[in-house]
Amino acid sequence: MAAEPGLRERKKQQTRQQIFEAARKLFAERGFDAVTVADIARLADVSEVTVFNYFPTKEDLFFGGMTFFEEQLLEAVRTRPRGESALRALRRRLLDSVDGLRTRERIEAVLKAAGAMSSSPALLTREREIVDRYTRRLAALLAEETGADPDDVEAMAAAAALFGAHRAVVNYVRNRVAAGGRGTALVEETRTQIRRAFGRLEKGLGTYSVRA
Image (cartoon, rainbow, N blue to C red; front, side):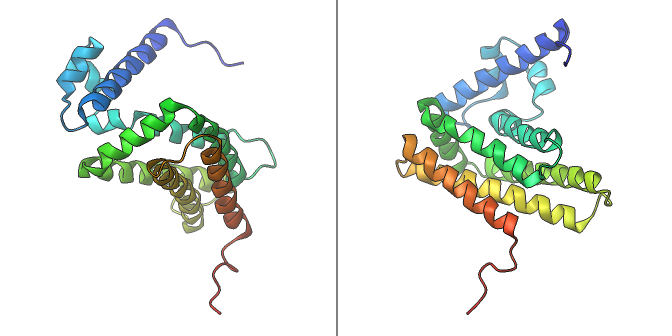
């Protein structure tokens, strides 16, 4: 059993969460570009230096929830049981996360994030950077597990396919929510999309879209 985090570590986690929640509240009220790091520090009751210690940029604050989930995906692959493929581990974690789309809070978060990103090139750029970083981390994990070189093309191609499917699902959810998708129907539609996408990857692409 893992040891309980010490007092100092718990305080750090609390401060990090406090800063993140303050930023999320201000972004929702004013929009990303209208909020400064000083505003966030005041609401979180910490110094600007403390904010930067936990989140090097304002974009990192905006994508705090995203990076937390990407870490969970890597952890699902890293800690999967013997006999389970990386694909199935990642698909399982995605399917588990979909039920949260039933809540009003999750829907509002999707709408607000999409709205902020549509008007901020800096956020779009940072999202791409985050996806690239986690794709490379997954590739390194796969290469290590298979005994391949760190720059192995097969590991990178597999990681790109897995994270590509994941991000395609994210975009699908954003579009469906923007079009009014809600509740059980949205959850089941999204699960179907996940199963189809990862089912195709599991079968391979050799027989997909063969030109007649």
